[in-house]
Image 1: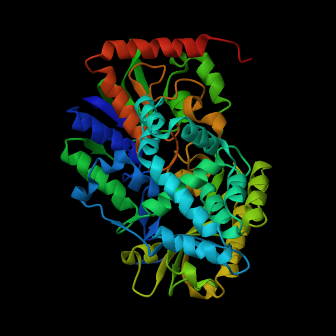
Image 2: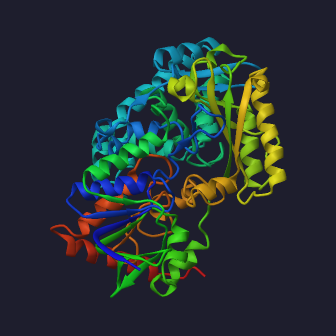
Image 3: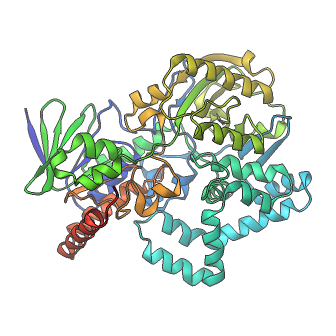
Length: 534
């Protein structure tokens, strides 16, 4: 057994772990990052799995949150090989009857398409865009900073004043189905909002789904849905190159089994091979909260109340993904979809609600809702000229592992694409299926194929993420920080969870570090010892 020592140990080389390592290194800390897989990236990786010469993004693929995130942009990854590219159009929704609604790169063009379907809907879209522009910067700052976002919140309050804040508060809670009905007469505008809301696990009639749908739709209209040239893995690799250039030691194939706690604080980690890496200052864990607290820590150091709260931790739905190699572009029935990088399909506005109800009842949806990616349309390097590297994913009830159920649903996915792109099957020259179990095998953080680190529902957000507490990356174990999507603000490739953990670790060792640590200890003590939840 060997041992090493660093200022900080980062567990996990996903985007949050890589962000955390970069920021700590920027502050002059000596950092070791340990990743169990043979390559970094977590759920940001790519490979040729459907056919030779066709690059598939294995997990996430389009990155509006990364493009808008001040955390990611602040790393200046373009200096380390990252190049963002965009499809001609942003997002489309293919309706079963052959119609389609599309978010174009230009807001006026989007509005024109909606206006053609329902007079007045174009103006309604432009009003929504104008509202977004009025709140954009302070709102993004509030979303991508530690909870509570005091400075960003004050800036937003000064800018919006009482009436604007009330409107934002309503937007934060309104169901997307209601928001769509209030905003648009035609179905096009409604499905653009609802389809984007379905990127989360919130149902269309659920509180907060309107905000998710509005946020992603407006980000699409603002920064687009860009992709890294060459594959999703290039985003992770650019982070790794930056970290290495700043002195971070990255060890792949290094699985951490135990977080060491000595003298009341996290002091390092023990790996599967028996070796240890000691941490002078902090351990940052880019792993799911249940795994961290239940499996990587001795139960004696985790408060009983926290362990009890973890029994109520709710995962988001499982994900089933299919990657295709096509010998020609997708033959869409609606020509406007040919240039869209992302296409939503399978159901109409009412069908989106039916899908969510099936998942809530733990039934496999009879008609799946698919998110479909045209990767070569967005990035011509993904496959040979004249072909298309494509994928689609859909959701299954939590805990779906039966191979027969998976196979049956894959066939439903094929049929859903064929309905809106007649002749699609004839162009398939390669196919590769990733079941929920496969996703978890390739990235243990994706438990049961859950890709958001836990549900996005309001009962597990803000100060209730991952359990009722502080809503921050600090844990009840001094020196240990939760840096994964299980922490606020949750899933998505924006790097905030890693950034928040790094900032907290730096604050704990800064000029007012003693005060910071005392406040955190007191806060956790109050949260974990007050009241009776039995």
